[in-house]
Length: 257
Image (cartoon, rainbow, N blue to C red; front, side):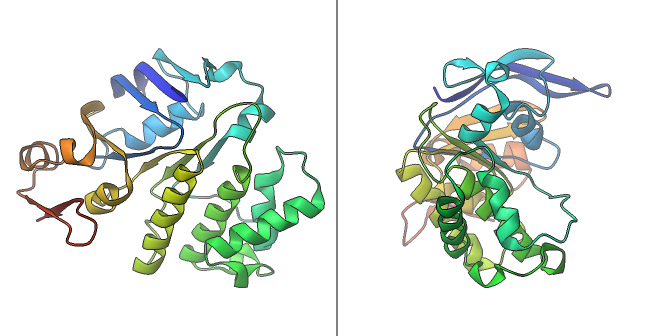
């Protein structure tokens, strides 16, 4: 169990944001977290990454308590793409992606090679020398995605690696949404564990090995997309009448509303 939250509860500002949540993220698998707005999805990611301490319960990472890992070692194994970046400095795309290589001691030449490859992978190599503050929202998000990819680009001797993505496709057009999902699957095939929040159930069904459905700070269901995505659950959690079919190309569950 690479990254595991066990009986997590989170109480902030008088609200129970998470209640007795148990989730595990395995190396080489894609876990998608879905649910309505305010259900606790992003709060869970913040606990899983150590940004917030749970009120109750524990988070373990590679067989150790998450907080027992030295910061630099943890950064070699755990990369996080938040929903919104607060970066407002006039860094070039190259310099932003280089931030992902700071925890590693691989040298300037190797780091430059990785940065170039990461930007190319996310279709942002043309942004190499452009200032981050002059980019569109989608371009900024692609550069930030390249940053976290660069952070887990090479296997780590300290342990298995996890990539955490909070709504990674929100700012993207259809082509870049599809590209992002392809990248996520490629990472999983290389042994990296991916956990991400998605709003689009069909995107989640398409790329995830496991879905975790949140509702009111509780896990309403978890399992494979085929196990989880039922008409009854979508009605119960999202308040939407839906029909479940099969995607003609992928044969994955297709939610029709």
